[in-house]
Amino acid sequence: MTTHRDPLPSVVETIGETPLVRVHAGPESVPVYAKLETFNPGASVKDRIGRYMLERMLEDGTLEPGGTIVEPTAGNTGIGFAIAAGQLDVRAVFVVPERFSVEKQQLMRALGAEVVNTPTEDGMAGAIERARELAAARDGVVPQQFSNPLNAEAHYATTAPEIYEALEGRVGAVVAGVGTAGTLMGIARYARERHPSTHVAAVEPEGSVYGRAVGRHPRHHEYKTEGIGTNDVATNELFDPDLVDNVIAVPDRDAQAELKRLAREEGHLAASSSGAASVAARQVAEGIEEGAIDAPFDSVVTVFPDSSERYLSKGIYGSFEEWEG
Image (cartoon, rainbow, N blue to C red; front, top):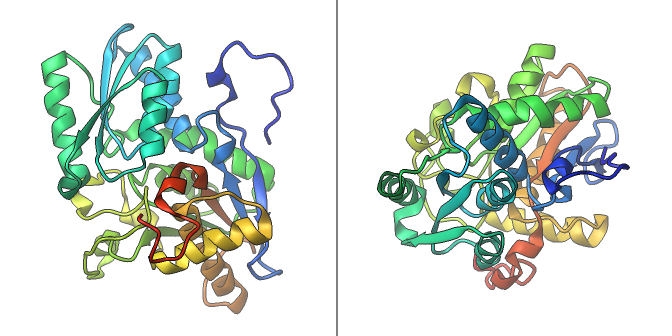
C-alpha cells in the first residue's frame, strides 16, 4: 500500500493505493482493518471518484475538454473533483449546503472551483436541485455522485481490489458508511463476486433513514455526523438493499467518542464518519466472534473516509455539546 516510489507526472497519479491498517479496539480473533483514505492528495475517499468519474466522462463524450461540471456536494467530493478537474482541463462549480465544513469550502475555492451555497434546511435535495438549475444555465454537466453508477464503479475498480490484495482475499465482512452509498456498493459488489457469503453492513448516523430501505422504520432527526446518512432514501439511487445484510445506526455521541479514542490511542486523525464506521465494524467483528454473524473469514474491513482536520472549526474534539456537527 502507498507504493509510489518513482517520480509521477501529476498529482492525480497519487490517488489510491492507500494503507490498510489494523484497528485495535476489536476482538483479537476477528481483526478489523481500516482503509485510510486521508492518504489521498485531497485527504479523502472522494478523490477516487473525482478522478475516475471525470476520466470516464471525458472518454465517453459526456463531458467535453474545457467543459463545466456542476456538482452538489458536502465538500469532499468537491475537493476530489476539483483536484482532477484542474489537471484535466475541466471547470468546476460546486453547490454546498451552508452548514457543511468551512474548511472544505475553502479548499474547493483554493483549487480553482466556484462554490455556491444553498440553505441548510433544504438539505442535499436542495443542493441537487440548484445544481441542475446551474448546469442548465451554464451548459454544464452534473456528474451526480448520488445516482451515477461510475461512483460505485470507481470503488469496484480501485478500492476493493486494493483491499483484497492486501488481505490475500481473506475478507469476512465489509462495513462502510453510506452517504451516496458508492463506496460501500462498489466494494460490496466486488466482495460478493468473490465470496457470496461475505457479510455487508451499511453504517449511518442515528436520525438517518437508510434503514427504511431494509424494512425498518427509523425516525428522521438532525444528526451531527457529516458525510453519511440521508433524510430521503429516494435521493440515494446507488444504494442496493440486496447487497446489504444489515444497516447499523450509530449515535453521534458514540461516533464522537470513538473518533477521540482513535486519535488518543491509535494515532488516527479521523472524522465523525470514521468514528461511526469504527463503532459498527467492531460490532460486526464481535458478532462474527460470537457466532451470531456468518462470514467466510474472521476479518472485517472498513473505510476511514477523511480527516478530522476538516472539522476542527466545529469543535470536533471538544465536548459533545460543543461539537457543532
